[in-house]
Every structure is written in C-alpha cells, then in structure tokens.
Length: 385
Picture 1 (cartoon, helix red, strand yellow):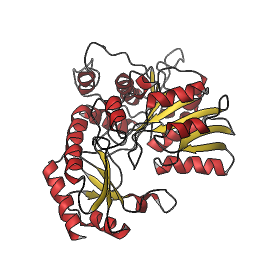
Picture 2 (picture 1 turned 90 degrees about the vertical axis):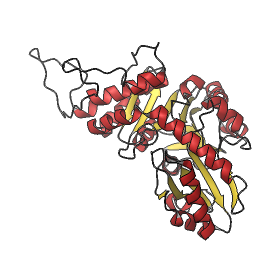
Picture 3 (picture 1 turned 60 degrees about the vertical axis):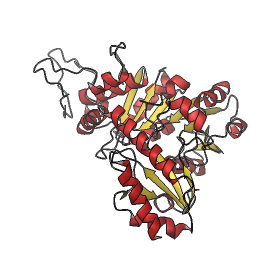
Picture 4 (picture 1 turned 120 degrees about the horizontal axis):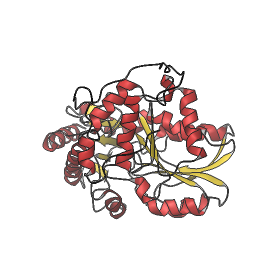
C-alpha cells in the first residue's frame, strides 16, 4: 500500500512521464531498477528494515508503480495485483458471506460471471441493473443492507456511460460503497475518486500498461479503513501482488499513457465518424459521437478524451460479423484492449453463449496506428461479406 508524495505543482503528464521524477541516488539513472527478491534479511537487531519480509508483501518496484498510480488518481493509497481479475476478486472476497451487492447486467464477463457464481452458491446476494440506468440502480439498492455498488463506465462492450457522481450519491445514501471500473478510460482522463467513487478499479493490463505484455489489476482509494486492510489481507494470502518485472514493465508503459490515450482517442473518433451510418452496419457504439446517448456525461467525466474503445454492429447476422473480424488485415483478431496495436473481436464468441451481447457486435480497441490505414482495413473487410 503506497501513498502519493509527489510535487503537486507539476502537471500529471509531467509527473507520469518522469515516473515521479525518478533518479537513482547511487548512479543517477533515470529508469527505475527491478527488485526481484523473494525474501528480505533482517538487520543486526533482528528488525525488518522495510515493510517487506516476503514477496507476497510487495517490494520496492511494485511500490513505485503503486505510487505513480496513486499520484495519477490523487489517491491516498493504491494496491497492485497480478491481474485485473485478482484485483476484482479481492474486492469481492473481502465482503462478508451473504452481503448484498448491486452490479450491471452487462459488464466485463469475467467479473460478471464471478458475481453470478457467488450468487448461485449463496456466498453473495446480487441484484442487477441496466448499465447507465440510475432509476434501475436506485430501485435495487437497499438502504442499510447493500454493501457494494459496482459501476462500469464506459460499459464493456456496449459502451453505455453511467453518471458516476449520481451513482455515488445513490450508493452513499444507502450506506454502500461505490466501486468503479473505468478501464476503458484510464485515470489520465477519468478520475473516478474525484467523482465520488470509494474504490477505483482498473485492469492495468490495458491502457495503463499499453503494450500487451503484462497482466495487472489496480485498486485506489481516498479513505482507508478496515475494509482496505481486509482487501490487502486477501492479496497477501492469495499471493496475487504484482510481480517485480511486471511492475517494471507497467512503469515503462505508464510513462507514455497521456500520449497513447490522446492518439487512440483521435483515431477512434475518426473511425467512428467515418462508419456512422455505414450501409453494412446497424450501429456504431462510441461515446465520443454526439449521437451517443451518453455523450454529454462522457464528455464531462473525461474532459473530451473518450478513449479508444468502440463497438460496431454488422448487418446480415452473426456469421457476417465473424467474417469481418476474419477478413481484417491490419486489425489483429485478438482479445484485450488498450494496447498500441488495434484489435477486433467477435464478443459473443469470446464471452460465451451465456453472456448478454448482440451476436453481431464486434468490439474494437483502437491503437495508435495511422487512422486511414485502420479505416481502409475495415472497409475492405466489410466489402467482402
């Protein structure tokens, strides 16, 4: 658990680019080192010199990455995990048996499936609402009973936008904590804690790292307490702290976060504008389009940096959508998002038959390539179906 201590007079982009102005005191190196130790010797008085006794406690490299994200989120403390799922699992596992939680009907399928499994096993009581629908959320939240409200905004893979401040009021009025997953718009553009979230969750595998070469998850908070200690205990017992080399790669990736997200947003907006109303598509789902029903909220919550995630719905059925993904030559037909390379996936194939997604939906993660190349690639793929 790491606190932010950086000079707040510098802009977030400057602090991130310099990894909190890192400079090795012995060598002058401007790149943080990797500390791979699994165990730590005590001093001559048999005392622990740092807050690390064993690898599951964390280490200096992971703590540096946590400090960078805490600074970016303006959080008091941040915890890194070995994957986004392990971070989400720690939040879920810290809840007492039988706790009531409220989650979207459609969200990242891995976390949604875990909530459904825990509900089926009577480990948790789960109520559902339609993403972005605050009336449905308020209707299922129980005052004095609900302990956790989960918001994913923008919602994956439909890219619905939920008003986080309004959701926070609903949760807090009921005595619940609000967890936000804003992985699609990382904290360089959406600072959920500023909007009232109690826990900000991100799959750091995605935009924060940005190079498709690690898995990582992160939780950040403003207020700590027993619940935060309990989450740390889950991480420690399960051994899911982010490993040193992955933390080092994450630091490397975060230094270009602002540039990558800016370019991905620019590309995504160009692609969305080009394909909106396309004769072979039934819809383009992207909050950056003024026609998107959540556009105004997304603009307010991101400052106009809508990110690089969108979906398209292809005419002529599921096989036509799969064929578009197959026929692309520049887009990679792969799962994940937030990397420098553009990806396309048929979401129903990846998430399975039980996931509530339109079978004609293709999820696009727009990277930093030339936008015209990406547009031409999609055009030729659509022309072939």
